[in-house]
Length: 85
Image 1 (tube, rainbow, N blue to C red):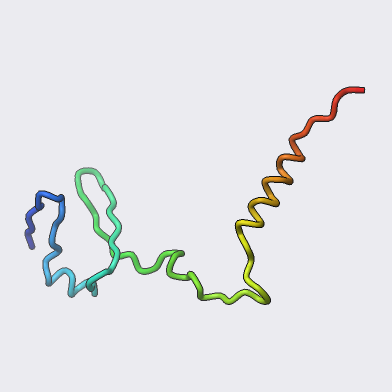
Image 2 (cartoon, rainbow, N blue to C red; image 1 turned 120 degrees about the horizontal axis):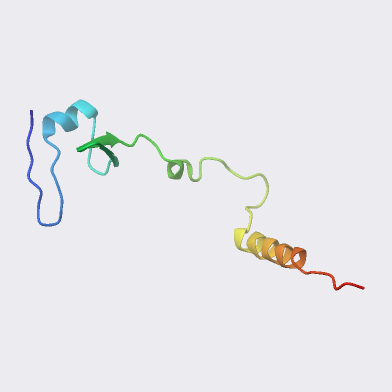
């Protein structure tokens, strides 16, 4: 069993034997989960953000600001109610 102390900033050092066993290194991410009265720490292997830039677009890159404006304009037109004749 290993022990650690919570600092004033709420930080805790994960003991080296545990870091080694889980393969944790500087900069790795960890998720926290509550299970009853226990805190479970799990290494985060990958997130969707790790995939950024991994797929190259065909042709020119999309301008998402322009797409958002077009969608907003289309949604605005869809909400216009025709007056009763």
